[in-house]
Length: 387
Ligand SMILES: Cc1ncc(COP(=O)(O)O)c(C=O)c1O
Image 1 (cartoon, rainbow, N blue to C red):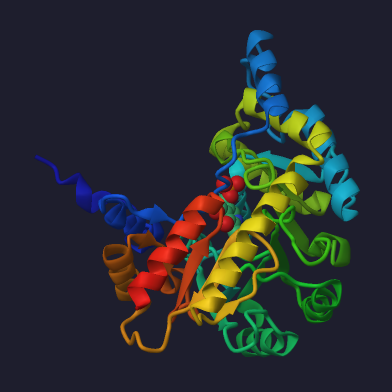
Image 2: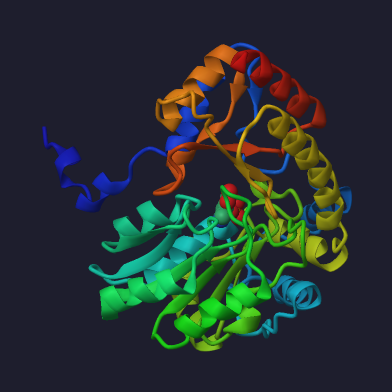
């Protein structure tokens, strides 16, 4: 009997189980636990968007589309990105519709990376970038941002670039950030752009939470450094459409043409009816994101007030739907153990900060994509737990 398990891709060993999902599964066994772990909107997809998908199915739109996405969706996405953030992407050759940002990450990293390459990753960050680049034989250069207000500074970026030279292929920015909720101003992005523009590197700018910016209008890196930036966006968070799996990559036509080759081999084209739904979301759903943002803003205010009263230190969330809270000093265990204890002792589920890379230890990620009632219940339970 041949042993095929030893004949697999050696790089599979870097694909460790997703620690966020594993932890969530572990503590979900606890009866009556309140989940503040969720990384997706708790709203339903807006009705007008659902109706567009139903019409698409009834019209027998059941065929492959152009690999880059239907021209209707690319046009709607281009107009949305222009109206919202002033981005200028020609729908013909500067946009690709992907199966969520997740596929955008894989297609883009496969397009730009060779084994031995490096990517600068300011952490804490959405962890998916790490296994994908390692699977492709590349490695991360972590810049721990916990000492610089959880923002990448131009000095640290320059230092990492100078130290690592030609091997660096890209820097990843993610703002508003998962897990810290921190975002960047125009001036901060311009500062980073002065460093990036002096190097032959890509700037991968994951702006999937762009519609959820609370303090100021979202500024896209694609408007500041268009020749070097690949912008990732989509409808997952803005229109509560995580399950529809529609993302967008925008960038220079020459690079987009190359990413499109990998993307075609991966999925041929995104699901046709989901594309119809996303077209409606981008075209007629300009207010969907802001409406949800209002609801999130109310929830985060409750959460901030409650945590403040309990004496928690936390990073003020300027965007997304996450609050990154420091574990109180009396708890000396690591973030996994603290979260386990909180789950069993208070029946409140949050995510250990160490899941998000260097700088995350000592913190927990609290998602406020949860009802006001659940947030209040969680705060009451944490209060009793601490007492
Ligand atoms: C920063 C960030 N990028 C990308 C994704 C994945 O997005 P999608 O659902 O469109 O694949 C997530 C999901 O949580 C995220 O937080």
